[in-house]
Image (tube, rainbow, N blue to C red; front, side, top):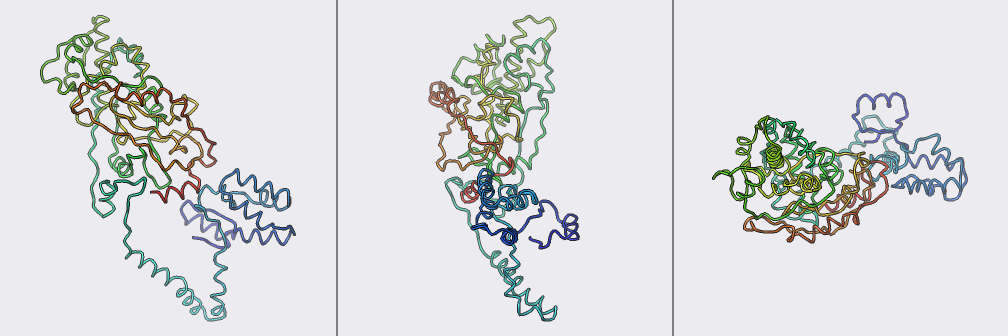
Length: 476
């Protein structure tokens, strides 16, 4: 909605009191150009001012305003000193106008209302209604009758089977049921003798997370906007995803280091005897998965006179339970795979694993996040790498180039072709050596420093540029 004469004090007060944000005071570009041409007789002045106003990036604006400075210093001074660029220049409007400049549209209607100017007020109102209101209402009626069909696009593939398809057709699916095991950690206090081993393994921050409240409506809304082809959420203002940066900041896990992988084949009974010092009873594990409830019942208390060997065994099983109840929880509540126990044989070696990437690959599409805008200084370059994320058989792509705004960088249009990763299951492959099977992706992870995403700092870090939004809205 545009209100003319918005510099009138009464209208300014009314807008401020009545209209919710975002309302903005903007100058009409055509009026600006007309006023400048009255004062300066400079060739192509209107075109130069228009280039300044329509520049979509600050760099283009700076170039255009410099050209204006050279041709007409007075005009440049009026535009930048008497007025603020965010009131007339597209590059500084925070995407409020979404690619459209503010012009005095009402004056283009003057010729249509000439006949009614000298008529009775009722005639003026009726003419205006028939010229503008009636066609507008007819358009709304026709739009309501029009059926919009969602079709597959290069990004919205398999739309027919997506959860959003049912919602599009008016079906209320309700909130998703969510499962979490964080609360079980509150019943397992950590003994101070175990802390050095937990810290050495890289979990000194995660074990302190004792409670997590699940916002089911929010999770459901995010799931409805999740697209597995790109591993991103499709939101109104662009794509967003869970990044390595988020995992590092929120969970305190390492996002650089060796890939979490290996074989899922082993003698689990013997492994438990060696690393945990216990005989696993029948029924405590199935399919290589050890029951979380059995772990808590057997190991939740460590005596004060325990030897160093026993303390290490308790620390290992606590770490196994910790990852099974949190970062590698699959919602089944059955247990945690014993393959993870092999990674805790040596605590120092465990601390060199990239637990953050494993967390993100195994839980992509299930976790919640927040955007960490200005924390890159705390991290290494890994969060900005376009690289595979690996957790045994699971491989998912980390795609920071699609969500550059989350790192405070200017968002560019990403490639049309999205790399496909074949998702496979452990079913029927209990003896697979995943380090060998996924060796090509592991090699890419080890060479991640060669795929760091770079870009210029975003001038408006919460808004994508209009050229990207045009592509995004057309593709989704």
